[in-house]
Image 1: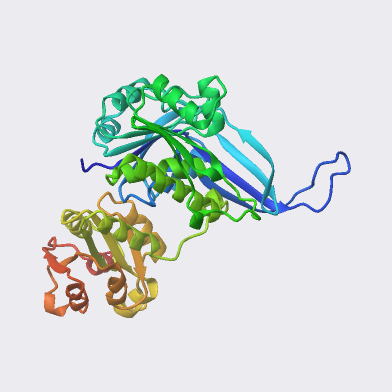
Image 2: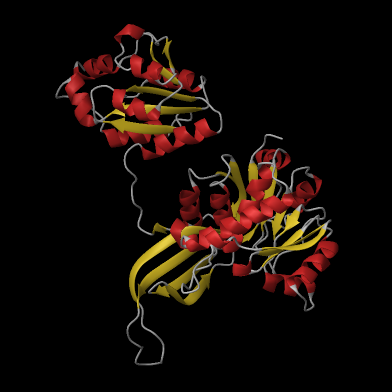
Length: 453
């Protein structure tokens, strides 16, 4: 199969409030935390999907997002990382806030009661689940994994299904390739005491799963499959030093996402579990989920960064990157036609736009009429445009050296020999395509018409 790696489950908003605590509250013997910074990241299935995207180029997240600020924040945090298929959320977005002092958690505050609405799935979500090459179910007991139609599709798929269960969620669908509870969860699910190996074997039978891997923290995982039970330890090179007290937040999600990505790539199950054990250990050693957090205050990325990242992502998937450029001062039907035709030539269209100073050098002191910020907003709103990059030079040669498009599109009023960027396009293996212009439209003519009344 050549479909995406699909993550199914509940997405939460994880918040870390970091500060210092060097005194006790006078009213009670509890620490007073002087807040320094607040950090946000997707939690639950959202975190699992972002982690899966580290190992697989094509990741789709099927989840429920609320129509509130928390849902909007999650959508922004996930944008550019994974493709989204969203279900409606009934209630408020779930937020889990850890108050931390000197890097250690003091208390966690939970807000929100949101649950996935069990409404009919749209055609795109059904198609994504049917076309998946591997599926990870990150169940956090909030209704996505228990959606009747989703369970029906998961039970019928030929793709390997990895199920990361939750005590408040339902059982995995029969026939899952692997179920990944931790040791405390396994004891709760089994309802009896036992070693991790005994619990794994019991749950494998109870869930009719092909295999169960019980994770046991720094000791690795215990795998039960059709050949028996074995312990898969953490490699010595990936172990966290005994003197370090690690933050393990998200370690289970890293294990589940890594094993799914390995199965997605065609690995045998024992090898996939061994790879996931090492990935989870290195993830914890590198700071765990906190390393994926972003400041609560939005920080604007450097101009064009998103466009360059998009180009790399499309290339990794074997797609064709198309680019075009110009001032786009006053958008008119000629521009729209050019952009639509350019987009038809590949899998993503990135528009390179002259900065305000660049336009002034080319067109004179009266231009641009529309600022670069507003031109970017208008272009980004077009269905044919996937990203916009602003450049300061008079020609886009330097930005194209980094962007390296497969196709560079210009209007037919240019000749290939007249384009200073033609050589750099061809040096990187791309080609120049001239698209016929629409007669009667030009920004200069529009400005002259307005000026003459």
